[in-house]
Amino acid sequence: MKLILVLTCQKCPDVVQALNLMSLLNPNISHTMIDGAIFREESENIMAVPAIFLDGEEFGNGRMTIQDILSSLGSKADPAEFNDKDPYDVLIIGGGPASGSAAIYTARKGLRTGIVADRIGGQVNDTAAIENFITVKETDGPKFSSALQDHINQYNVDVMTGIRASAIEKTDHGIDVTLDNGAQLQSKTVIISTGARWRKLEVPGEEALINKGVAFCPHCDGPLFEDKDVAVVGGGNSGVEAAIDLAGIVKHVTLLERNANLKADKVLQERLTSLPNVTVIKNAQTTEVLGDGAVTGLKYQDKNSGEEQTLELEGIFVQIGLLPNTEWLDNYVELNQANEIMIDRKNATSIPGIFAAGDVTDDRNKQIIISMGAGANAALNAFDYIIRH
Image (tube, rainbow, N blue to C red):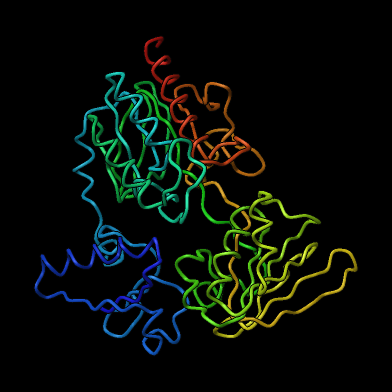
């Protein structure tokens, strides 16, 4: 196997560790790690990392754990390993900050607690700098997630990673959660905290050019666009932070915001406007991604004049917010128009015994510290539900 990465990528260490371990345990497996930012001749046509190649063909792209790699090879966790588990008092679905907080609170109450998650830390793993988590002046996503994992491990929590929930149903004996390998778990209560993922532009040309110039992680893929012209779509904190980071790598950054004003914090906007190789275009609605096999530009509509404009560039970093991970629920609990789970002040959903917390819910503000508070609130109210039923 050949792995192409960049050292600033938060997704890459997981893949390196997975392939190192597989190579160590199986003498028939070997892999070569290449820093694509340094050895550009090896990564000339690579526009997203980490990228895994098997026998010269692309095998995978993006963060992959051992479980992900094995799943791509057709292997799945044995359902028997899950079907024989005793029912839980609280089963938490998801692995982000809300999940970790909920698990710690329920475990401290002496409740039998389980976590079903793709990975601990969730999307926080892909975050570069975290500077607004009170009492911690500065950290990053991987460090935060590692600390969360360590804290969870201090308690008797059954952590099941590399697996996802695919369905949920309340029955006479409790709540059944079906996993994507067909296994079923039972619990008295469930806390859903499956988080959210990057929102796409949903314009012509985007889907075909993802990982071919359309990217979502400036920290991972930015070095591959050294001395090139790129765009960042989105004027919130994430978009402005991305533009600032990219400005130190690429030739020029054009930031597009569809509204009349940027939504980012003032301190970030001031830093952005101080950079000589950044242009900000407001009232710009992205309408199309251009390119055949690789991004060559984008089209946007000037919302003031109605005229369509074209930018020539080689990379587009999409930073326009999040989509809640609720498709698997199939509307079993009540959702709002944005497909977020609707909750009350107890973090309870429309189905008694099922709670939700974090970015998957209709809480307006999506922040790590808010998600952790919501997870604790859901946990305490799940405990109250159990003792009253």
